[in-house]
Length: 154
Ligand SMILES: [Zn+2]
Image 1 (cartoon, rainbow, N blue to C red):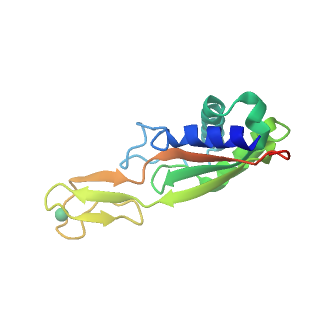
Image 2 (cartoon, rainbow, N blue to C red):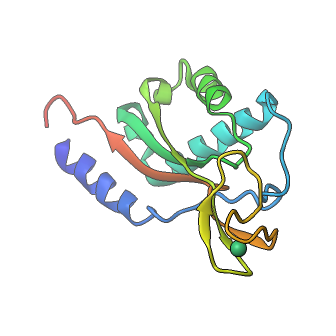
């Protein structure tokens, strides 16, 4: 059992760079906050991703799903956790918990090259006042790893 778990974990490393992109949500857009349907569909995507990498008879062993969520992704973490728990309840993934790391909204200025973190989502270079800034991170939603519980006989 432990060997199977280790094998799965190893194969998961291969998609540590996997990214679920939301191209419609660039930094200059903001989506409706509190739109639970949005988070439910993201929770559904996370379940699909887990299903691609974990054998169906191992889903009940999934203990933790590591996510990185951009501060400016438009995703409400509370709504996502709530939605995920609601739709995995009474399923093999019912014991799985989301472990979420918030990625700061980081930009680079196209005029002076300054890299900075925007706390409030404003796209304005604090060094030179330019609006020609490109997001480096903080708009993504990534599944970074999946942890499986070791089997009782393993
Ligand atoms: Zn600048």
